[in-house]
Image 1 (cartoon, rainbow, N blue to C red):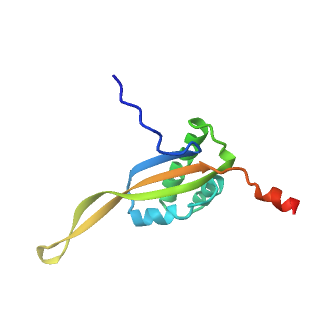
Image 2: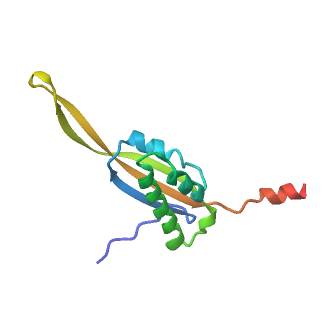
Image 3: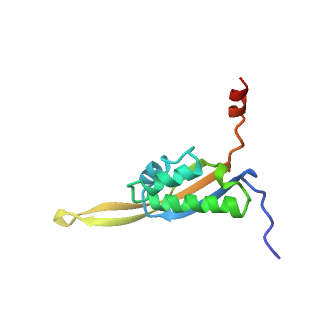
Length: 134
């Protein structure tokens, strides 16, 4: 007995990678993710490589995983990949306390995030051929 097969939720020209429970707030992760939305995959890797944000290395690792999934599992052309979607979601929140004066306590919330990156194979551009003909 095996589990029933699920329909593929992505298009045939798309591949996905997910990283869960990243120890950074969703707001900060979304700032790093915004750097690569809509960019070519190779340009996005270069941007993340030289980014000063600490979380950029985790985003880069997830992006490289999505590129590897596209190449190895779905036989897509790596040179034509673009970052089509980057989704950042909330995960758990660790609750800690910070001791304050007069025996009181203040709540400290340590946020975790989920990251999902979808890369898609862009079709060959027909625009340069039309411009040359004109």
